Image 1 (cartoon, one colour):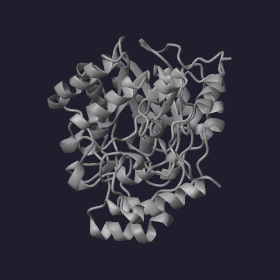
Image 2 (cartoon, helix red, strand yellow):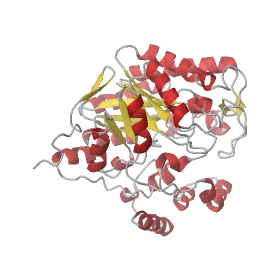
Image 3 (cartoon, one colour):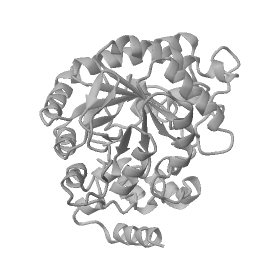
Image 4 (cartoon, helix red, strand yellow):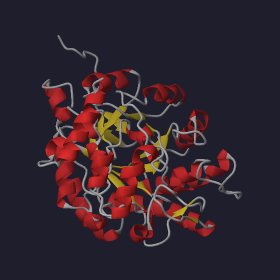
Length: 412
């Protein structure tokens, strides 16, 4: 007898004008596969493996709308010269029956002059101890110009053949830095009240919706909580989500956390400090993180569907399609989320070692992705391409030991 007789998992559904073949989306997890800030064969091969593996849509991550919005040297930067390479990727994805999306954003204060080409910018100009770097407060004319850059990036995404765009308004990046009272200390029309703090987001969305027109889906990733005292909490997050709905967003990805303050609230589990520092080039940062990393990046225990309790509140309050992300690595957890009224499920880590997880579920071959939540992929991606430890040969003994320790803790 069919275990999930009423399952919606393999039924089509829409994001605005775009129809996906099923309810799964490869979430916008940073791949680190863009040397020179440009698409690579490795990026194409990975997204092709996921598309051939059965997902409804795969999302390239995370592309900066301007040069000064780059966090990493191996991150996409949207500009005309990369569009032919992106078009090659989207054409290949489409050949499998999957749709293609790209996450667009700006890191704000989460950068360095060597990467961004200038002193990092943000809503306010306080020193970012987590990068670490001085940060410059944006001027009015820069804020207006930046909102237009989001629209320009959407137009480039259309030229590249993307079906959808995902605007990053969470996780402590630039739009989120304007929204959160933790990073926005302005006393002008861009700061103070939540209505003022939403002004930049509104301007970005107006440009995005205008550029998307009638044939592209617009998704926004937004926080339900920033994940620490002094940040956005549920009530304000609901107000932001309702504003995004009013602004015309076709779907929301419900997430949480702040990469500069509560990174593991986003990803859950333990940050593998030994892994992270092993791949670092900067010697003083390597030893600093090795000594103080566990204090700066505290563990937040992993569990399946870890954002679901908060996401249910948004499901009750909103009338638009909602995309669940956070701890869906088994068929049972995916079905649970869909049964509670969420239209789509995003996954990333579950598709690293098993990019054909969706196809295997459909064939009845497996109900478990095999992700063991040790976060090796996260520790590695800050310096190299994102990869599961199961797919990497010849790991140093120190990393193997760390993986086994974290794995044993997850099983308790």
